[in-house]
Image 1: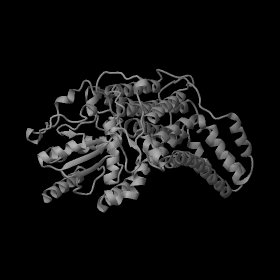
Image 2: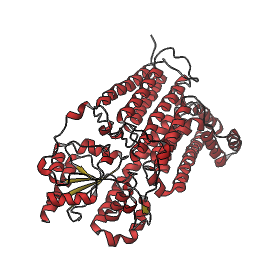
Image 3: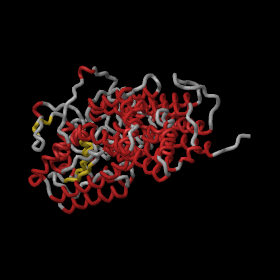
Image 4: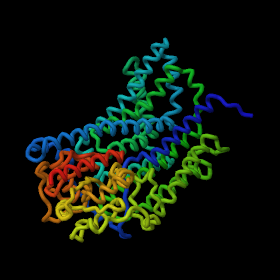
Length: 572
């Protein structure tokens, strides 16, 4: 009977952490939005035009010069407070994503086997234990420094304005899609992405120097030599961070990534005896690499979906997206049980307990997604999927809240831009409008306030509000009966007619797309570029209560809506 030991427990722990990272990244974390289909039509690449919109940063910078002419002090303060409160949370999420990505990269074949060699160097060359600990700390700090500087270079190269625009820019999203596909194929063993060997050799020569310089070049050598494994992982977390539009996102994600890699080298150099409890290098390291390759390919589909939605290509439906994720999940299961293997894999004699549980987790996730092909809401991942409105076959279409009552309808029967936004996520029972002037006219007829929902095709928080807050009975009742609901999609790329194109009074750029028109409106009147961003106004366009950002507490949103209703009635 085989006895259990510390090495077995440690290896199991590593596998379970990998399983957690796999589930988080595929099922929960990929941050952001997906949508799908209007008709079975194909658009050739030659017909697609990518156009620039006034970036949020450009508009905000100009707005600071003219805000006294266009907004009240109260609205501006509330918008600023909302942005301030949301930014730290977002940066912490980016840091955590980078840390998880760094931990996954540490388990790859190019990094993990270097741990005992590096620890041995410090314990033998360090002299006293205190000196060895000091050198290992410097080594870890150097690793962090190199990666963070790399992130800062990306921030400086793109600038805050460009980073904010990347999330909805079609060219960049498509480039991200191709980049992650290439990285994923590399992890599957088709080829390796490496830096020039001469560069690595030069760094290795300099690492022989003593003192801080030698330790720095040792850290640089690790970064370069391990690039064939860490490069795709860096690409994954960087692309995710850049797509969030945060100015410091690349540097923050690299801080988390490098910390996860540096910590094991530093800690095991401090406590070298703990190395005995670690599992030995072997075929399981390549399995980690392959699984991450599948994850990167699955994550790449998000960026292709972003482009499909914003430019109305109308072919990347929800069921297509789910089918691809299900297929990737099945391949992961077959790989883990040894039914398929790649060129660098060794034979799998038996299934270990950790491997079995990872397989069960992935298989359960695959089974969970299958009902989505027939319209199941899949609430835990619905924010990251194309909306149900893109589904060709939806068994759930006959369920849900009733449509608004006839008494709540206006004399305007044709909604402007309605055909464009058939694929936009819908909340059953809510009668949405898509044009500001038309919504004002409807509000005058119905004598109701307007709830402006500044939303986006690629906005994960918007999908979470639509899936988890708006369907709440109390929220839904208020939205149905007390408001004219106006959705303004700020990242839509539909070209405006020449007669509708204007010049932004803030950025000075020509507004050529529908999304840029609404983005300019949001920044001009409310000093915000957030999405979702909710504003309650009356028929005159006057703001009734301070605007509100995303909240995942239905009770809090009900309070906000009721305050708007009370302010509207008070003004009558």
